[in-house]
Length: 118
Image (cartoon, rainbow, N blue to C red; front, side, top):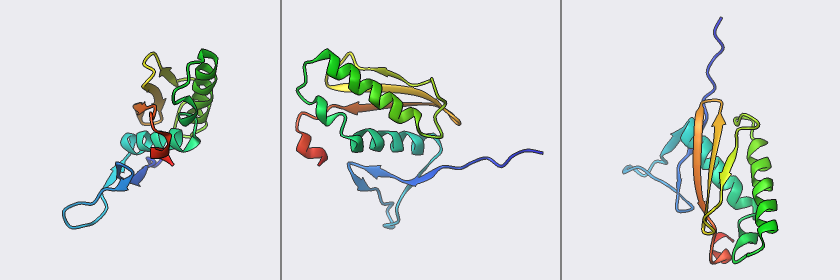
């Protein structure tokens, strides 16, 4: 007997606001785009990127990237051990992971103005 497929659905957020269709009804994202959106919000809300604004210490960056990796891997939809973060560019991080519905990739900018995220 086949198990039912889990459906992840969320309201689409664009530029920190709910995205509406032409009729004024919220748009939705499902499956991987929903997981991706949740990861972005999880990272931003953790405050770990704000701590890196203007930070030059490689040790601080390494610590925060490890904390972000652990945060993302705690999500039940992410397969543990699959999170890879590329942070060679000090202005953004790229995150790749395997989820239960396929690969997700996320690009998050490190804010030059931390108040933007407050």
